[in-house]
Image 1 (cartoon, rainbow, N blue to C red):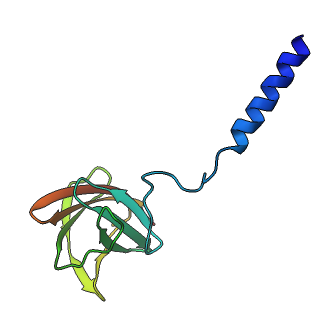
Image 2: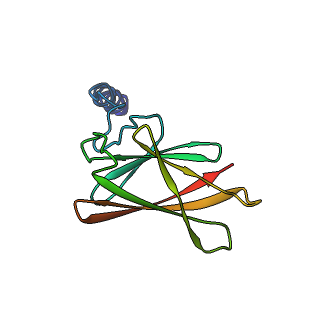
Length: 130
């Protein structure tokens, strides 16, 4: 009797495991259109790509569509460890906001980006490392 119960449990659990599909598609997952990391915000999402001391910022709608620099106002600040927030200049190159990070002998810097879209703000924080 015990063996039959174990056999039934194995058969049912194997059917349950095989019934699931689409493990690579997570509901609410954020797609990176430019090969970076996407952070979700209240009003928009922000994708950032770090390459050395250069950080490229791509504002995205919640649908994953790119937003232009005319639609979104970005303000970036950096903070060294044991330091204070300092404003950083954002240049527009080919429709992409680009920030040059000065590490000042540190290994990492915290970057705070404030994005304003249609009068509403989203705030993003992430680490930039050498």
